[in-house]
Image (cartoon, rainbow, N blue to C red; front, side):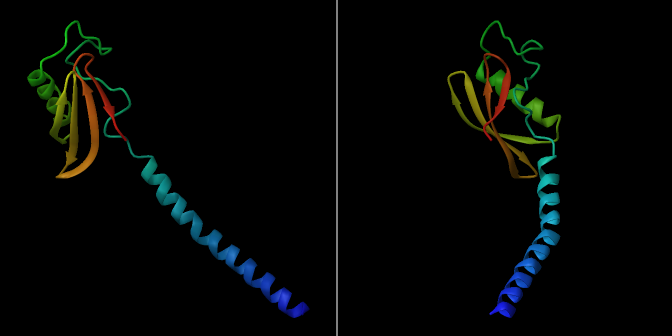
Length: 116
């Protein structure tokens, strides 16, 4: 009975050691993915309105679409407008055809918000 318990302890210890040896590579990979710059920084704004995202009047949907496209084209990304609802525009941001972000643009303030 004592030999069986020591074998179980040995097996459990070996399993813990093996897990600890493989865990750092998983954590390092996840950490590296988290360190990437976001496509749309929180609360970023376009130059359509003032520096701090304050407009005196609501921008037309056409001007707002142009502002969104200009903003992301400077980053080398494409934009697909999905929906215009009142002052908000929902769009998919794409990098080489792959969706990298979905944003809401407020045409009253010129602010971008990632929905992720």
